[in-house]
Length: 295
Picture 1 (cartoon, rainbow, N blue to C red):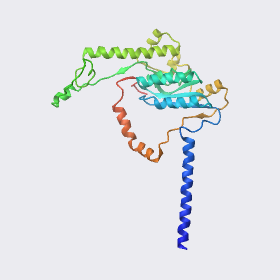
Picture 2: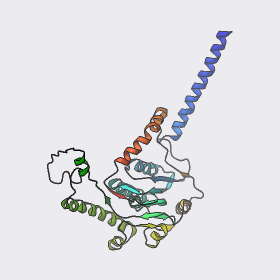
Picture 3: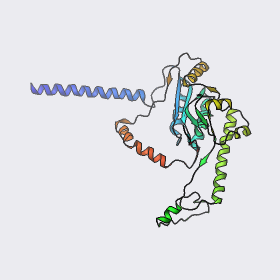
Picture 4: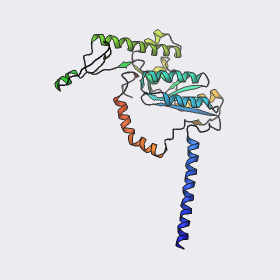
């Protein structure tokens, strides 16, 4: 009798375990990045959220929606003060490529400034809330110097370099007039690239954009008056606009599936997440399209 009860328990728990495995497998199939596309015509939403430090994940999401025939249009939802130069440019060009194949509209949230605004310019149409913080067309780079601190600590730094400019911007030596001229040339060249792309995408003269490209930010309403955005409206307004553009009635709105890390991967992500965030803050780009003011 006792042996039969043990066998029954083993069978019951074994069945439950197998059922759980099947359930997990179904979830992975449904929510994995390689899952089949939407079963009906939909509008996709790709989020650009937070400081820009890399572009790979964002572009992967755009590519998924580009390849999915049931995604008829894409919304880029931006809440970003900008960030690294090259990823901002890569996002801009990736959005432009997608806009050549499907309707793409930007919905600006709280802030879409500097690199965030740069990326937005790749779309067909830009919507901003009246109170959105946007603009900040400009480039910033900052250096710090610890020479005097090291002198007080009686620490010597020995540098071996192959050229005069190899250690330009180093915190361990004086920032000279020559260094300032060198970095100014670089910053203004990157700034010109920003201005030229904004002028092209907004159908404006370069000289007119230059009048606005001194780093200042604008509210969404001000940006609309200055032709930096097309419409004032919320995310829902953008959905309705794209529904009309594609002829869809009450289309589903879908987001890219999140990458499944597995149980141990998720535990690791939670355990190290704060440390990674802190490390990113300590290694922020020195030259960036980034708005650093209040949001």
